Image (cartoon, rainbow, N blue to C red; front, side, top):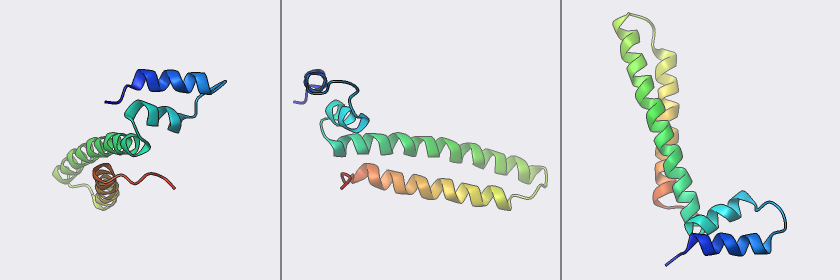
Length: 96
């Protein structure tokens, strides 16, 4: 069982000054892969929220008979980034 408080205490004894964010995240989540997966899942949720808002905007634009080509292109970027992040959250590879 991973204890994030004792891991953080060990880091504070080891470092004289600020703890690097990547090291602190690895201590909090137990490994760098788990930290990467948690971050990717959070960012994927962010892009999901962006996509939902964009879909709502596209529907409103269609109802008002306004062009939606740029909106759809942006939505495609949001969805592609969401797919990439969800795949990373499922199978995190630690940075080299």
